Image 1 (cartoon, each protein chain N blue to C red):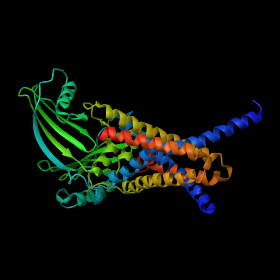
Image 2: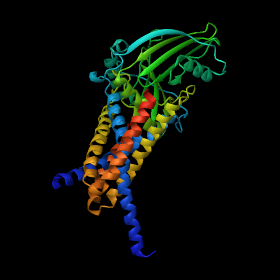
Image 3: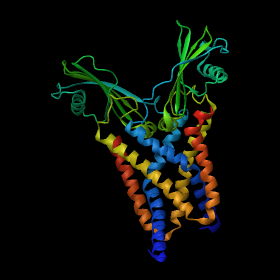
Image 4: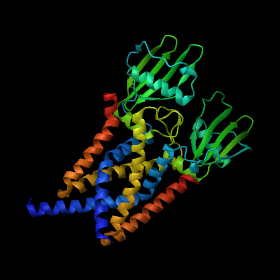
Length: 209
Length: 217
């Protein structure tokens, strides 16, 4: 075993692990909320609605294709000081109204835009730190592929979420290399690796078949 | 306590912390790989190699059923599943409007059954959807049987409970590994400064997303 490589890998395992430790902890803690469908503070009341007037309405925003529309709305709402990831946009043709959720970790807004009046009615709700963890755990996720990541922090979070997955792979592979170097621990480690593989195969088999 | 005994106790605890750190990592290895890999699949739904929904196999069939003796939606659905030889987590997709009809979904990773049972007529229609290995893998990541803000659906299949327990155990194991890694790092005095920089940078960045964005933006 190359000693220099071993030492460099051990340091990388340690420092990268420490850097990503809060992300791994955040993903892990949110698992309990997702698995048990329980969220403390989930029933927080919304604030009184506020109206933002004088919006710079992009021409024909209601008929733009989905991605262009959320990008146009994103620019418009940013000018009005309403930040967050825009979700599914509902267009009420008769009322001339666009309605959408605008979400950021820990805070949710329901925004209703009156196209003719160029106003937005915003109802805001603090959803709290646990909801923020759950939101981030599921972001960006597989839904609303065409419009997701329309708020730049969510694009950044996408990289970090991916980075956490890649890091778990790197940390586990480098951890195996570091463990193999410890001759005295090989037997117990091998037994646990085998037990873990058997448990994994057994549980997956029970669920799938 | 004499200082030599105290030192011995600390050394033994550190040794066991190190051992438990890689023992738990080795035991959970395959679960970690599954959740890390499926996390990537969920975040990249456009990865064409992992496409599963367009490649699904669908079939539809009818079968005779005996009206369940049990009362209650879940008990009746479980009896119909037994008669049909289907195993899976029961999911209510619509409110029950007619006592003579029971409509529900039963699913397990890779297999989805949409069931419409006509209890008066003694027949059930089953629409079966089979997914490929990518579908199975991806669904394992989210297979909990329950959803936030959905009070009607509860975990009612033993295998879902087992999988949920496995998810909890993996999460608890990861939290333990994070905490034990902090201790492992702290016990190496020469690496404290660099480690602190890495940990603080990670905490600040993660904290920015979890708590900071709503105050900054």
